[in-house]
Image (cartoon, rainbow, N blue to C red; front, side, top):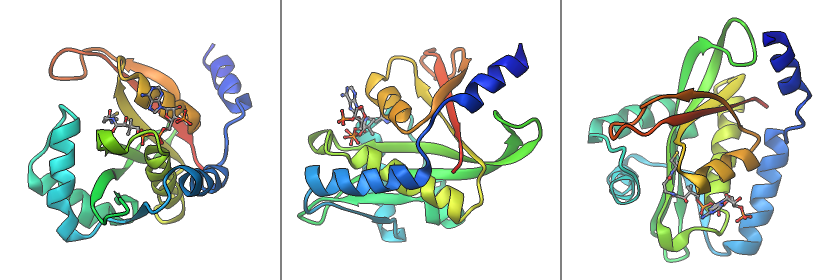
Length: 190
Ligand code: COA
């Protein structure tokens, strides 16, 4: 049964990180002219925290943002609008954990948080931030997999992750403080 499931996953055709990255650049050129994605700098972190507070119920103290930035800054990106404002971010952590696709410890890129301000959505920035981060998780941190948690009701995010080759591998019951379940979604890299 387990092996059957594993085989099915291996047979699933998922776009490579490089394909996704190329798609992201194309999408941004067409749908987000004037926007850019770059590595976060230390002086961006207050604005990142502000966006997190505005867009998500999962919030953290400033030290949490700083720790992720200082430890895994190559997979911490911000999206910048044409008038030079930060309008989105993604931050990740590299973990050693039992793999979803291999039966031993792997380096896994955990997408801890991603958000784009409402008025800048549906331009490909979420896809772009994920593409940049996934490429860095693979190239800079040698991650063999990537995973994340998402509320089962968060259809925009679930659609985004599916488009990026993630699949639901587990349900964490009552994962969130308000009692909502999470899907754990994962994919192999690259
Ligand atoms: N409804 C359905 N599908 C959606 C969607 C929506 N409202 N928003 C995005 N998607 C899917 C679509 O497949 C979309 O591709 P398309 O526009 O070519 O159809 C794909 O995701 C990529 O969309 P993109 O424009 O790159 O995403 P975005 O910049 O709007 O950002 C989120 C997506 C999830 C980051 C954004 O909605 C957000 O910040 N939400 C609040 C924070 C959040 O929920 N974060 C995730 C926590 S796990």
